[in-house]
Image 1 (cartoon, one colour):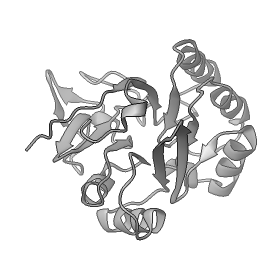
Image 2: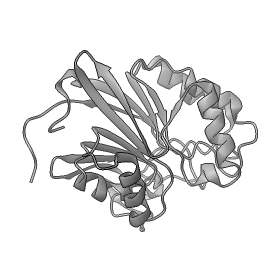
Image 3: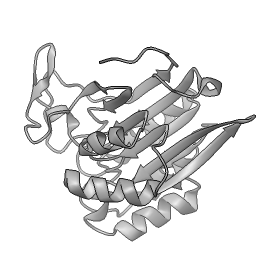
Image 4: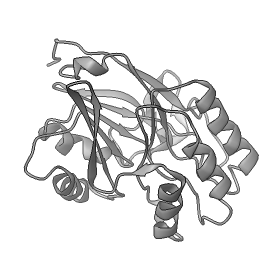
Length: 238
C-alpha cells in the first residue's frame, strides 16, 4: 500500500461481508464463522454489511459473537442493502449496543504513538453517485482516509479521487458462479470490480466474495472470510 501509515505496517485485517443470516446461513454456521475469526486473532475486524438476509429476527446471538471478536485496533461495521430491508435502525442499534463501531458516513481515528490511522465508513449507497455523496459527507473538506468501508464497491472511484488508500467492499458475492481461474468473469454483471484486488494509482480496493449467499449455489467462487496483511510500499503503480 503506497502511503499507508508506517506505524501500522503489518496490520492484519479480518474482512467479512454478506453473512446473510437467515435460511441459507443458519445460526450455528454463522457462530462458527465468528469463532474462526476470533481464533485467527486479527488486529482489526471490518464487516462490510449484509449481516442479515431478509429480516433481522433472531440475529442477536450473532451480533454478540461478532462484537466479542478480540480485535485490539477496532471492530467496525457498515450497513448493507439487506440490513435495511426489514428494520435497518434495529440492526444498527443491535451492533452499536453490542460494542461494534458502526460507521455511518463517519470517520474514526486510531492512534499509535504520534501516528494515526483514519478509518471511514459509509452507509448503503446503490449507485456511484450515491456513494460519492456519502463519501463527501463522511470526509468533509479534508482529504481521504487510510481505510474506507463501503458495502458497494462502486464507491472506489470517488474514494480514490479523494485520496483514500484502501477500500474494503462486499455486496457482489463474486457473482457466486464464475469462470475457472477468472474470478471477474462471473454473474455480478452490474459490477466491473466484483472479486479480489484492484488498483487505481496509489489506491487499492479489495472486494470479498462474501461468507454467505443469496442463492444456494457457488461454482468456482467459494465463500470466504478474507485476512489481509497491509504492508507499506513507496512504489506507486501506474
